[in-house]
Image (cartoon, rainbow, N blue to C red):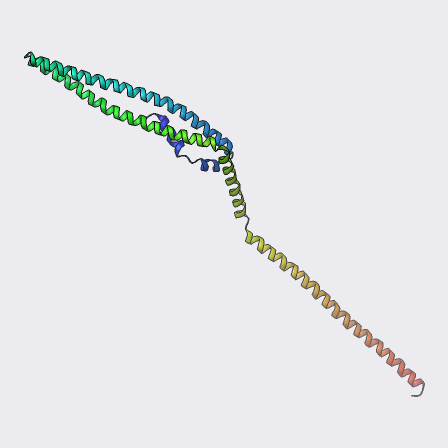
Amino acid sequence: MPTVFDRISNIIRANLNDLLDDAEDPEAMLNQIIRDMNDALRQADSDIADQIARQKMIEGDLEAANKNAEAWESKAELAVTKNRDDLAREAIVRKNDYTEQAGIYTKQLEAQKAAVAELKTKRDQLKSKYESAQRNKEMLVARARAAQAKGEITRVTTQSNTADYASELDRMERKIRQKEARVEADAEVADSKTSVDDELTQLGSDQHVEDELAALKAKMGK
């Protein structure tokens, strides 16, 4: 089989969506794939023509072998009618040679027809895929870009550990609560200290009044 057969088979088996999803530039990749398909189609048509030409050559060889076999068989029959067994034997040998050749050509022709048919089938499959790629070019590129964007979002989301953010927020909230509690405690301590100072000041004031009262009473003889 021609080498183009393998190339066509590889292109047909290729998944366009997977190829485009993995491409950095889906549109450039798809354009290249379409060009490769077009080149493969032209090469396939050329190779199919070559294989059909070879098939016709085999058909010609087969036809010639059959005619020669028939001709030598007629000669053998003629030799028999002339009582020339020696010539009849030689004619039979020649007839058998061409009959054997015809058998070989028959097998070659069957194989060649199968090869041409298979290559035509592959060519038709590739042509269908090529036409589909051309019709759906914009859609395929859009799907590939959407898949890339989705993959990027997934990658970023995977790398960003949401649980870590939650833990960080919890730690920040706890620090804030600790600061708030410390402010309240400081205020409470300050209020408590002020109350004690006020009581002590008040006691000092009361004592001064009592001293003045006692002095006044002493002065008045009370």
